[in-house]
Length: 121
Image (cartoon, rainbow, N blue to C red):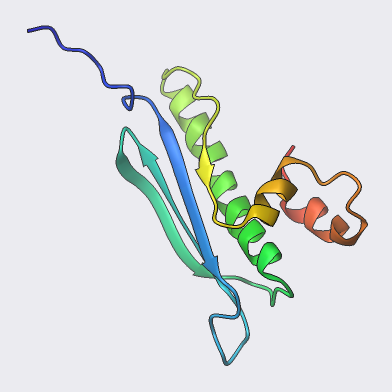
């Protein structure tokens, strides 16, 4: 029987989640992400955010930005190891506004501070 690689063999996937004002004492939210490679977890984090976010969109967007940084680093590491380029890398996020915002920050005057610190083009 011949070995046939799975469609998941060289696939990276990411999931993000966060809670808005999860800590009732500091009013800070918690970001979580998990990165899978070939269906196995290779990176994850659960961390209290450094700022007090004023909206659930910002909380989710910060979690997405943290996971994106990690995936960029992982993709570069895999490239350094000689693995093929892994593009695109899908992420799952449960906030529709955050998903729209992640696609473009153009014409959003109220989120310039988010674009500068968290948006990756």
